[in-house]
Amino acid sequence: MIRFMLAIIRRDLLLVARQPAEMINPLVFFVLVIALFPLGISPEASLLSQTAAGVIWVAAMLATLLSLELLFKLDHDDGSLEQLLLAPYPSWSLVLAKVFVHWLVSGLPLILISPLIATMLFLPSHAVPALMLSLLIGTPTLSLLGAIGAALVTGVRGGGMLLTLLILPLYVPVIIFGASSVAAAAQGMPIDGYMALLAAMFVFALMITPWAAGSALKL
Amino acid sequence: MSFTSSATSDLLCTSDLTCERDSRVLYNDLNIAVKSGELWHVKGRNGAGKTTLLRQLAGLHPVELGKVLYPNKSIKVIYIGHKLGLKEQLTADENLSWLVGLDGSSTQEQRYAALERVGLRGYEENTVAQLSAGQKRRVALARLHLCKVDIWLLDEPFTSLDQQGIVDEQDWLNQHTLTGGAVLMTSHQEINLPQVKILDLGEYVSRSPKHPLHEASPLT
Image (cartoon, rainbow over all chains, first blue to last red; front, side, top):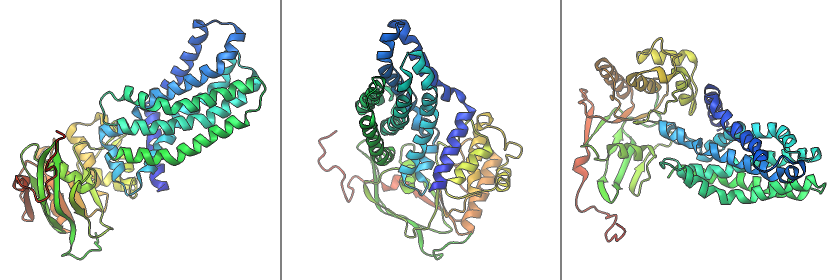
């Protein structure tokens, strides 16, 4: 089964390498939203540093949503999803492998670029580790939760809007705790509690979503 | 190729298999037993449920009434449908490599040999997007030469192949059944092989199914 998952990961990464636009898209979106934000509000440092945590988290969530629709859709359209489901391995393993690649492509670059973004929004430098840590735990949770929606709307024409409606409620707690953890760190307060809750959500998503999305794919 | 089941036992059978789509019964009480060495040619008009039957046998379409049975658990099945499962951005060789890799392994040498058998020598490193429809079909069919599989489920495998391709493929079908495998396929083309068994889905539609799906269904 490990070999099966590795085969999917290798293929999907190869596909991304052949079409780098797919990889850059969420990242460009993320940076653009955040770069435009000060232009719309005000370039004042005190205001920006207060809103930075929320803005970064919302932008990260939207960037994840943007790329989720295609998670299973391309495989469904060309028939390779059928072949994946026919392989003698549980369907959750295929979901887990696909979600891992999705996070690697859409989540990880956001985390790596976040210190730069944080500086741009005048987030206090002592809050940057908290930002990166919360994104590190939070973005895989977003990818995992999104997989359920992506699996459900696979094969539905124009399922993007439906996907957003389905998934957004599930994203709310992650956003709340993710953004508040950064805000708390900026004020010098402890963030252990927030991180524990984020981690709990991640573990919960890791246990439930591959199974749920795998079942949804078989419908 | 070796098979664990004895030559006479069934590789695949169905019992009272019924398929209903959009409150229309496509076929009901379908009982077939596929033995090794047999080539089943599934026939029927457009929309008769040929593709659905193959998908049900492969386990891709839910079975609501009746059963699909594989008496021997170790039997391996390959399904090639209308959608070939190829990635346009990958080369023919890469596509084969990962498709075979889902449940086995292959060396590059084996894959090149398989591609040569389907007449794609020299196209191994071309991306699938560069190939014609018939050549794409050939890439997908090359899998048949790489996987040691008992049952081939092929949905319209002759689509977009040229005449020589169809002749070649009938030869592969013949080889596979002669070495103990079994084939179920749909096609509007006649297959000129002695071991062909015809399954006409039109004969399996009756007004009074044994297990009515919706005896009193106010839903629709």
